[in-house]
Every structure is written in C-alpha cells, then in structure tokens.
Length: 356
Image (tube, rainbow, N blue to C red; front, side):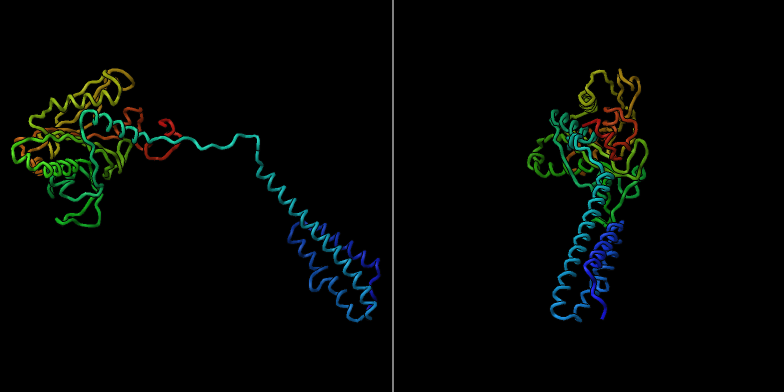
C-alpha cells in the first residue's frame, strides 16, 4: 500500500494544477492540462482510487482532504476557462471595433428607374391628348407579332428583327416568340374595339381608335445604343380622316412636352415598314443644349397599311390613320443626357441615384 499524501503534498498538487492551467495558451491546451489532473487517468483520480485500501476512519479524513484539493483544482480550471474566454472576446472586439459615436445606418429613400420615369411621363402626356393606354403579352404568336402586321412567313422584312423564339408552337404551327415590338397591340386593341362596336360599324358609324402601348420588347442586339431587352411605345390613331398632318402635330406636341422645350423641330424621312404605307422615320432637332443643331432619330411611323386595317376587322375606307413606334430608352437617353444605353441596365446604384 502506497503512502497517503500529506496535506503539503495535496497543496503542491493544487499548485501544480493551477500553474499548468495558467500556462495553457488556448482552450484546447487547457483541456489537455485538465486531463492530467482530473481525467480518468489523472492524478486526482488516482488518489481517489487509493481510498479503497484505507480503513473507514482514514478514508473519511483523507477523502475530505482530497475532495478539498479537487475543488480547488476545479476552481482554478474554471477561472482559467473564463480568462481565456474573456481574452478571446477582447481579441474579437479589437478586431471588429465599433465606433458607437457614429450615426446609425439609415435606409435611404428609393426612387423610380429613369426608364420608368420616362415611361410614366409618356403615358401622362398621351393620356392628356385623349389616347388610351393598352398592355399586352410579351410572348406573342406569329399572327400578332408578324403576319397581321404585313410580315407573313418568309417575308424579307422579318430579317430586320433578330428574334428570341420560344420552344412552343401556336395553333398556326408557327413558334411563339418574345415580341420584337409593341406593334402587336395595334391588332389586339383595334380587333377588340371592332368586336365591341360591331353594331356601330355595321351601321356605317366610325368609332375612332386612339391608343398607345408601352412595354418591354426583345431582339438579339446589344451595343451602346441597343439592348436585347428594351422598351418601346406604340401609338395608333384611326379615324375617318386622320393624316400625316395629325401625326406631325401630335408627335411634335408630345416631344415638346416630354423634353420641356418649344425650341424643337421635327422632320420626316422616307423609310419602310411592312405595316405602314407610306412610312417615315421621325427626327427631332434641339435649338439649344449639347445636342443643338443635330437631327436625332426618335421614332418610326407611317399611315397604317390598308391590309393591316382589314386584319384588325375594320374597313380601310372608313378607318384611316397613322401609327408610330418610339424607343422609350432612346427618349430617356436624350432627356437625361445618357450616352450609353447599357448604363440603364447594369444596376449601378451610383448611376441610378442621380434620378431618384
């Protein structure tokens, strides 16, 4: 039987454990030190096992002394654990210093995108002229997007519009596509109007159609002035005797209101569109500002082709008028002085914040 540890020996054991704990630089090292003293094979555990060989009175006295030493070792262990935790916390606080005197972070006020601002302004101006505002599907069938607008299958004019097609065919066997313009709304809106007013039309009473259709459109195109997804506003006015004169008056009034200047001129250049005849490009010229004196193309236009009027379910002898298609993005670029269309869609908050 081994000699029982004296009180001085237990004090030395407590001192050794306290010193070992104090020298542990990390929680993992502290756990290794704990195992030397309080583990299953530790020095305190070995002393507790030796109590079984003592007489009852000696066991009681020695057991109490060993338990007291064990409690002192556990207290030293707990103190070191807390010290390591506090040191780790201080290290994190220093690494992630927070200046509580700084003002709090505030959520800034949002604002409309510049294209949305231009879109809303266009709707407001044309609404004040008596135009309805129509909306339609962005995935179109062949009839509305091409054929009804004078672009039957294999027509060479289709090559002017590189198109995103959808892997699904319509009832006519032609594939659906992402609409390449908002012109399909000419057919949709006018056809619906013809059905609503069928009785008036049959009686020879002309029901005027005046509508714009703003929306997203898609073509395989991308550079400083073109985007695969862009915005267009289609305009249509049909009546008994609507002419190019009315087109010029309406579009000139629109441009002067949109750009907030009367110092603006308009001109027509001959062009070609399969759904209008005759057709023209519309250019504007500012009298002052950075673009003064330059003719800038802003829209395509023309008298609605008689066959397109028939495709609407109307009589071309009684419903005469014009259509135009303008790029909302292009108008926004000119209004806000933006030189690269791609800035509208890159999501740079520094750029967009200018318009909020």
